[in-house]
Length: 287
Image (tube, rainbow, N blue to C red; front, side, top):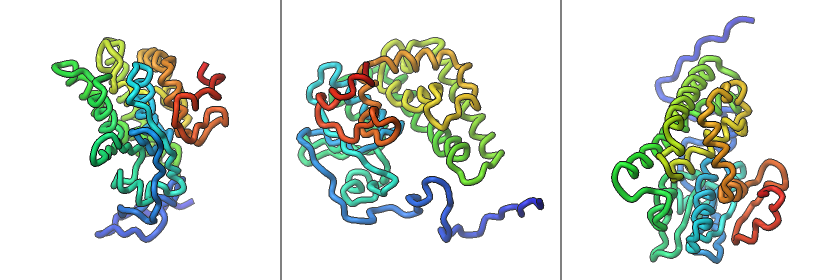
């Protein structure tokens, strides 16, 4: 078979054909709402619109951890955004997040209501609102925020880079997979070195840095994203595994990972969450 001709980028890129792959139908190079679609409103001041992807799970873990710690004001309604159906392009959701990505949070306890989008921003907002899981000053705060923003910058390499080319791209490209696999393994090594010297990512205490990093890299070493555990030899990152397993045992984490879950085993799916009693039927899963 003759080699395919080398691709030469055009002088001006045009969106004139479908890119292929699992998410081709919802990818587009323009922003804004494509249809009128109001968002539902529940009984609590905090209204979360999300999906139980790793980015969404960060926020539901945080909210459940706040409730576990006794912050009753963190009660929330969680509504699913079905991204494969294009819910993120509805006018209501775009009104909260003009970037059309989950998660998005509306705090109706303020006047006017406060919108917060981007998972890292939501974690910081909630930590400051309730005075929890983020050191208030000094080196400890700087360390926590540094690792939080490490996740924001690093994870697109794992998701949109490695995950796309390894799991979702319509063709396998050796160069792309090798390039991103190398960088993901470097990231795992960064975390492994850090966790060799510290119980948690930010230091001695559990913080929003752990909540941000665990849904991605914890899931990766548990082989729950991209089925790439063997390929990336994740079993060698012993400190990351120790940290992953410790966090996975936390009751709030076990609850948070179920919220807005529309995939996986039926007994682990919870499309909406409006009250702590909604978890009653998940007793077998939560242990």
